[in-house]
Amino acid sequence: MATSPGESLSAYCERIASEAARSSQLLRSVTGSQKNGWLIASAHALRSATEAIISANEQDVQRAPDFGLTPGQIDRLQLNRSRIEDIASSLEQLAAWPDPIGEVIDGTVRPSGLRLQRIRVPLGVVFFIYESRPNVTADAAGICIKSGNAVILRGGKEAFFSSDCIVKLLQKTAESHDIPPQAIQLVETADRDAVGHLLALNQWIDVAIPRGGESLIRRVAHEATMPVIKHFTGNCHVYVDAAADLGMAERITVNSKCQRLGVCNAAESLLVHAKVADSFLPNIYRALSAQGIEIRGDEATRTRIPNCQTASESDYFTEYLGPIISVKIVESVQDAIDHINHYGSHHTDTIVTDSVEAAELFLAEVDSAAVMLNASTRFHDGGEFGLGAEIGISTDKFHARGPCGLRELTSYKYIVRGTGQTR
Image (tube, rainbow, N blue to C red; front, side):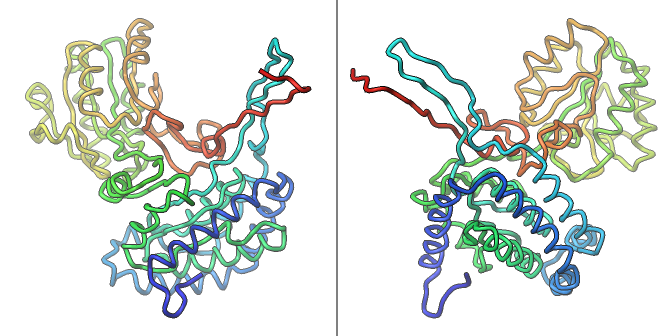
């Protein structure tokens, strides 16, 4: 699907988008067993092509320093036998999940005798823009086809050879299962203007889903002419209430912040009720310091924690994605709620408390995609929520909010059956 000789970038983008739209129409008659068969066969194909995938991946890894990738980013880019097995296994797990397409959401019989059903249908064509992780290529293709959607994949140029190898395998397997291969397409140009061209093609593309840095997501949200499923940042909070079990609070805080630093559901800010600040802050300081975490706090926090850095106003808005956490002492659960709703990103926030009253107030008034009680923010995940594979997490309020799994990549339509009724 690379640009043909003499074909302009805009013409190339129009071609792949129109082919994806035609494929999405054909996908509507593909059965669940066909899709599951494709997922299982694709897993086998990936395993059989392990050496070819590793060889393609080595080309990406060799180029990585030229793109300025850090050692951590290169590690996420790199594929080996174990990681390819994980990719294959994830496709097999996806095959085991129920097919959402055709599900009857509800139904009724009207006084006129008309029988109405609301059924789940695909969105159509998904334009997915994501970071340089080749495992995401297979995951996104799998979840889109399983939910009946064609997908245009725009991965990072740093993983092009790996993604290209994986997509070609998925396309070949699709063809053998009567699934249109153009339902899975990789944008085969590194030109950043291709994203802008594709975001203008709302006659063929039904939804854009960006996954990556905030600047990328804001660009997509600004330029897209179709709906966008997204979250900008993950500035997540842990609030330790006056009625908290402080041992539990310490475990939840450390897990929320430290279990994995560079993810959107990691805690970036800690709020502590003034009544437990003297007891809790010295202990959490030692626990976080042992994990290499720098604490930036307000004046009340700095009087209780040695070597605490001063938190600026911007710190409380910041998604660090690294070994820093902001801390503030609050006077009440309402102060905590107000702070989160003002500074947070409406992603994931948790309260640690034994007070039913405080818990219910927090759960009701914090305006986030996931609000938790006595649990780590790291549980905000499609797999942990029992939704299976996810294509991302949304902080939007329309269509999809929270983990975006199979059902979140569907819409619905009404099927109306009559016996000759007229109005």
